[in-house]
Length: 122
Image 1: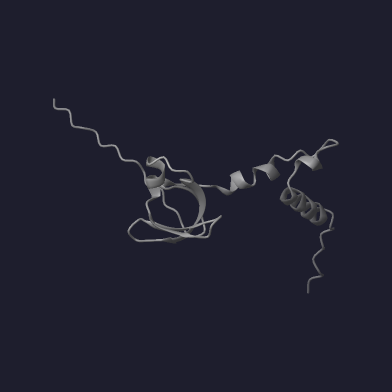
Image 2: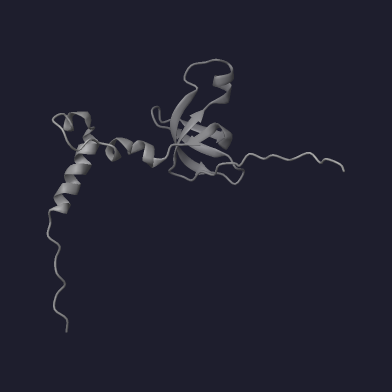
């Protein structure tokens, strides 16, 4: 019985234009330089499997990025403060961000509107 070597492959993440990602510049990282990891928005996905990113803070383009150095920043992480906001208590509103307060205010306004009945048929 011969043992064949097992092939292991790491699945390659696929991103699309508009995704927010955390990017780590491998050259800056491996040379110990500061500022090697930052948030970007995917500008373009190329057929080669590489990406063009826009750094959110500086606005500069980062080209020829391999997906191995990118991690998706899912919307659920950005919205966690709203999803877990305390709704009761004296200081509940003080602990929420402005975005959370705006969202809750909008939800309350639409929740108190009486639904319209459908018009008569015929």
